[in-house]
Length: 196
Image (cartoon, rainbow, N blue to C red; front, side, top):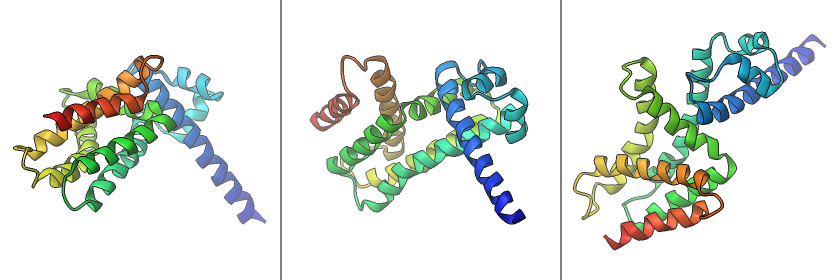
């Protein structure tokens, strides 16, 4: 009997943690990490600040959980790139399709990662290194994909630029949601890349 109760409590705790992380992603994307307060987060999820701290010992621990969650999203891109044998316009198109699908499900995730990268860039804080590591998973996989592409003189630089372009599409997708769809923006980038 006690085992069943404990399992139920653990499942509820995981669900609450997921709810907190999801709300933190949304708030970090919109306000930034430093301007997001635990009180504001607690209000967003309908909990007390104490309940937030029950699940995450500090705001920094919550930030780590958010980045872990975002890193799993980046891994989807790298997993695809690792499966492709060589770079092609079709491979880039598929990565953009994956990105667009991800954006449609959770636009704040892409924006949050970009916002955190902007906020911590040049800070020399451990989180800056952690964010670079999050990006590196995809950058390294995409650079390998571009290594034998005749137009990619510096595959690593091209991979980093591609990440920036994709995040730019996501930001513009939110900003211009009534003008252009995320799919149209992705096709615009791909079309431009193919013409050069």
